[in-house]
Image (tube, rainbow, N blue to C red; front, side, top):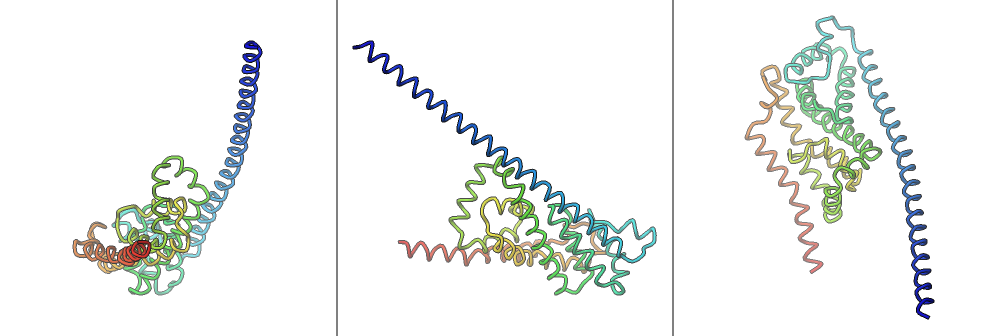
Length: 284
């Protein structure tokens, strides 16, 4: 009887091992199938991103083609500014043609601005200062807010297509923590978006890339960007009025302007904080 019991136990153990091996094999096959699907989806997303990039470059080339004829000394300055000196020289060239080719000049600056924002390329600050130099305050402010919101929305879309897997792979803990915060403060996301756009706590390119991954809705993201970039843009526009006297982009931000900006940022958080307090009182 003992031998029979031992044989039965051995048979049961073998059956359990076989079942476990079958389950492991099934899980591996599912993972392989999922990874294959993910690869296909990633390839498709990369193709879409490449197509968008090519279309953007083609648009930039079209803007250059429709621009009025320039002499050789002017052509060398028709480029995206990388420092304040480039912005000065570009401002002189565009200001010369702005009155006669008003919409062509505006369209060119807008396309360049959106291009930088879409692909998270530095340099949009100089274009903000440039818009302040070229146009009256209301027009410059609207253009900066519009370009920032449109470019950030396109960057959000690209991140949603491609960057989601990469960000979750490299920052899994932070991604899960931020996602929890988004769920916790979902009713006040607009206020927090305003705060982040007004302060240098996180760079704008990081906000654009991370927002779709942690679950920030697109409409809140776009509207929060449009409104949130307005206060810093006012400072850039004011700096644009004295562009030719500037020697560095840091001159655009004085201690007074930074203090006002921080006050606006803190004020943007108040409605969200009050909402959360009222919620806690109701739940209690």
